[in-house]
Each structure stands twice: as structure tokens, then as C-alpha cells.
Image (cartoon, rainbow, N blue to C red; front, side, top):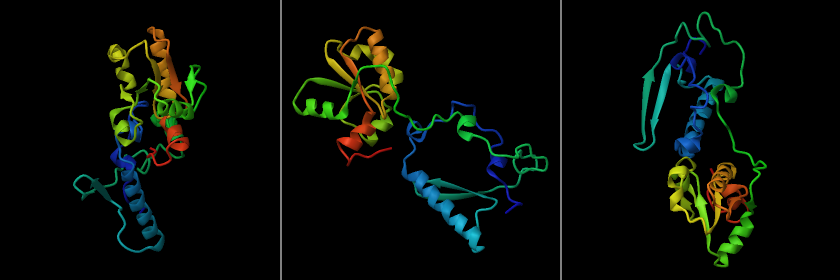
Amino acid sequence: SEQGPCYRCLYPEPPPPGLVPSCAEGGVLGILPGLVGVIQATETIKLILGRGEPLIGRLLLIDALGMNFRELKLRKNLDCPMCGTHRSITRLIDYNQFCGIRGEEKAVDTGVAEVQVEELKRRLDAGEKIFVLDVREPHEYQICNIGGYLIPLGDLPKRVNELDSSREIVAHCRSGVRSAKAVTFLRQVGFTKVSNLAGGILAWADRVDPTMPKY
């Protein structure tokens, strides 16, 4: 295994920080990392037991839509910074920071007016005319939604005319971070009856509808 190529042989340099999307932003189905993880676990067991033919020197390509598996043979790059003759990478680094991965959105003090998910559910059930604005991406909306009007955050400035400033608006995203930015923007352009759904659709799934898929 020490003679085989590593991932850096194929991609010596990572993409610039900030250009690596999360799985949700990139539209990666959650089952695919799970599938790859099971294959990786299988390879690990084979190496521990010394049985079978491990994927050393072979790159496995998976097309889940067609359920096709292909292999590419790879050779070790002698100039590889990780495993080459004169390697320059000799210790672990913070890859989240190095690749510019934002990681999990965390609940923060957004500084904008907020509505709790239980309150929104109660008011919607009571028939109150609240306009729910979903500022996530279309592929996120397809995973789960609460019936809100979809305008991705990046499209909001050019589509703000689709909103009625006289109505009460509750904006939400996945965890409440993007929607807080949407609320701030809407207030800057004259909307006064707008608030953020605290915790986003994750909080809705936790405290209102446990059957809702989480991503």
C-alpha cells in the first residue's frame, strides 16, 4: 500500500478557499456519501484482514443515476507533495480552514426580530395571513419545506418586488443564518413587518414535525 498513489497524486492542490460548497449547496444527495462511506469501511476491513484485492492504484467512479461503477488505474506521482520522493506535507493541517469550508451553520444572535417555530405553527393553524418566505436554494426546498414562497437569498435583491411590504413576513432558511441576512436586507429597503424564524427549518423538524427530513 505504501507504493500506491494517494489523493494528492490526482489533485495536488485543493481549490481556492470559499469555492468548496457544502453538500446541501452542491446538491449532493445525502445517500451518496453514505454509499461511499460503506465502500471505504469495506476497504479498511480488507486491509486489516489482509484479504481480497483493495482499491490501491485504482480510482472507483460511481454514477448513482445509472448505477454504474467504473475504475481508473492510477500511478503514483513521484512529485506528489504528500507521498512523493521529496514530500513537502509532513503533518496534518486544519482542512476545514484550508479549503474554506464553512461547516455547519450554528445558531447565533442575529440581532433581528425572531419568531419561534411553535408560535409560527400556532398562528398558521389559526389561519393568520402570514407570508412565509423561504430563502434556501431550490434543491434544499425539494428535500423538505413548510410551503413557503421560495426566493433564494442571492436572488432576493432582484426579486424583492414580488413581496408585499404591507404583509407580515416570516423568513426562514436551514438554520436561521441566511434568513437573518434576508430580514436585514428587507428592513433596509423599507419592509417593517418582517422577522426571522429562529433555528430555521431544522428547528421546525426538531420541535414541530419530527417526520420532516433533515439535511
